[in-house]
Length: 450
Image 1 (cartoon, rainbow, N blue to C red):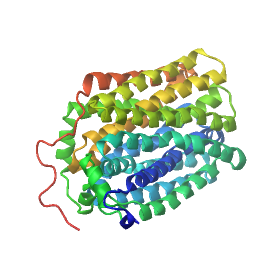
Image 2 (image 1 turned 90 degrees about the horizontal axis):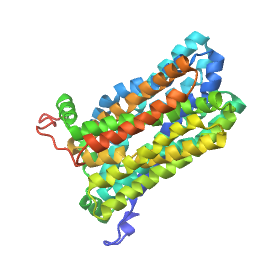
Image 3 (image 1 turned 180 degrees about the vertical axis):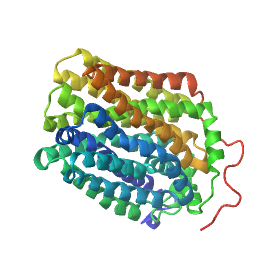
């Protein structure tokens, strides 16, 4: 119990909160990737073309993007705890439902699958802005890079842990089983979240020493208290002012480019291994875990490097930009896969590329450094809106590239070019990284209280 700690000994509840964020985000990304693992068998059964698969892969992101601003509004109005609970529960239930589409005829099954992916995307919309709100409220600036890198690296850990399991499920029990197992796991996690997660001021196990420590270090410890009071945000004024900032706009566009790499990995990468490299789906599930391990290690390392630079006196701008720029330059090496034949060399190059992408994936730490306290959910939602437009464009663009060229050559060039575009944004557009301040108020004076 927190009461057992002496006045000079602080609790470390924030790391428990981070562990929960990591687990939830792991399930989040595993649920997104179910369609990629099931994709080869599903497309064979339903006789889908690459273009049709591209649209199904992208369905999640259409609704995910459109629901970002409503999701951010819900987070700012009702707080992260309750909004995120409903997010986890709903996306998990509709993940289970995707396993039933095989009972319908091919045409109906495709429409149902597309619709269910749309619903899952909308349900997941508050997740990453919610992660950002909790890490901003629980972690001081000098620890926020590591915190954001850890929960963001869950996207790789999801592949490490679940890609082999899901590959085995498809092989042993059919593609439908993937959706039943992953959705069921998410429902369990939703109720665990409701029991374990609180804001800093509300958590029953945090002591005053930890609250003082994180608040002095820059954590916005009252962020969830404000959410619980249901402050009313002037949405359009908020959005207009956020988009008028060159710094924030550069960060948002940079996230779009980074997520192009993410969505290639989540959607077409297993298909690339099966169709371009002629692996079995079972082997592809295990092989896909190797670049994911590298991405996970790179993601954690990028956060550690950034936070250590801050502790050594470097500015926030230098400490955040250095890993992002260096990591994205390294990620461009995936284009070399077009010029090698040996499977193990391809896997090694992809692992190096995703190690670099992991190092550079510090966008959510930057959001925590720059988001205004009045509208952390809205700022995170805009960031995620831009970033996940890549979830719409990447699967479709690659689908058309494959349809025209019957090769992944152009697809890898396309993905690598987006890594270079990220470097351009952070070098020439973003400028100084600092907390954004609204020029005019965005919290209504007639705010509704509980």
